[in-house]
Length: 180
Image (cartoon, rainbow, N blue to C red; front, top):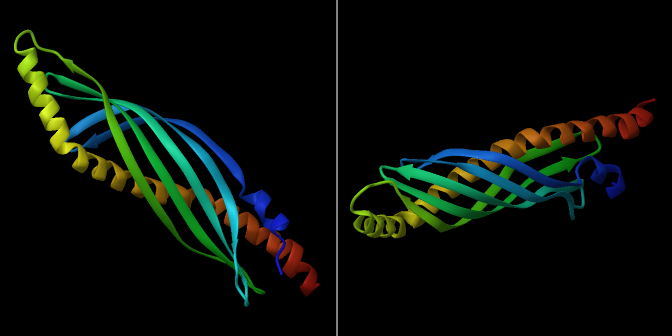
């Protein structure tokens, strides 16, 4: 039997991060900033032979970006739902972990369009709006794939210390007294 109070403090925390955005989506460099808010929590999973729980991230990133290609600058607002989890196994001998599962779901909205040209602004604007509408699904899919890959990598990196802390506490509070 494992008490949630033993492990949850090493994991449970709010997330509130602001980071710059600098990426290339479908050949266009985009720059701006994004704010990620949410929480990381510990969820216990029923098991008969060992303690099983998930470290879970549920968050949302809201970004404001701009991308320029030729005379056109597109301003966008993106909302990306971020979900990640990592299963942890604790038995009488040790603490082990599985791989990170991650997913991102992006929805973006064009908030402005700038045309840097002396002539033909209307036709450039019409062409740009058509191109944006045509490429939006591919751009969002590309952004989701990149966000998922980044999330998987970052969540792996960020959960390692918590797993290490759990291992240390397990050795110090459970295995150590039993072996003494």
